[in-house]
Length: 257
Image 1 (spheres, rainbow, N blue to C red):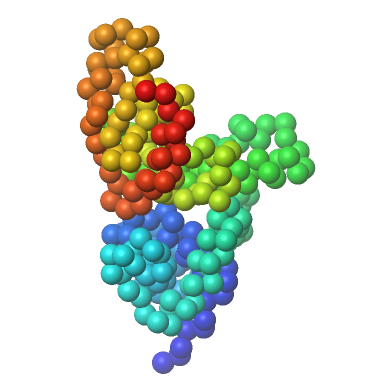
Image 2: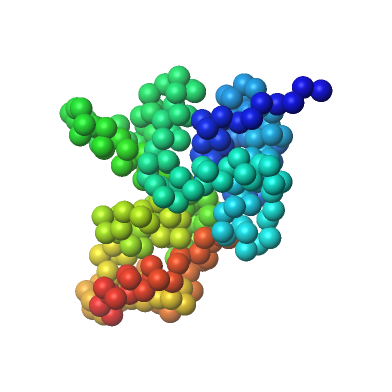
């Protein structure tokens, strides 16, 4: 029996790209996304792709705490990619999408049609910077929505078109944690806007806080329907990557009750 060749760096990065987007329970050989990647790579089977995904899970601190283990040889292969991610999240995530676009033989912006409007009239370096930013934000959204099972953490609404991945520490204030799913909360547009405007907050016990301004400047009926009934309730917590408490503390320090 011929032994399969070692995975190339590009192949491992593509497996990592899929790892970021799939819930752990769907990292199996029968998943259509796993099969699609195997076909894209050409020389890999769905079973081998699924195994690489589990290898990545085995070195992810979250899954390590859950006791997920991967075969030693596979773990050694994926460790360099994971370290790259830790040291340069934005760089590696964007590179993974660039490689995916190359394998699919189409421009990277075609993978993310939602960013095309932002690229209108942009050229050269400015266009490249915008593509990188918007692509990374798109991947962050996919990571956060998957871990919240496509549900708003406050209202529970589950229509993806109405959901955003809100940053706890804003994108512009911490380069290192921009793509950390523990720095994200899945919210509908209404609650994301209120969170960004500091009209609501989430404390370190994951309870919803509401500002006095919101209480005083909305009608009693509207306040109760959209905010009052959720006050002091615990958000719907994700299956993995709960909001990190130090990030919540950062936002709390800037909230005016």
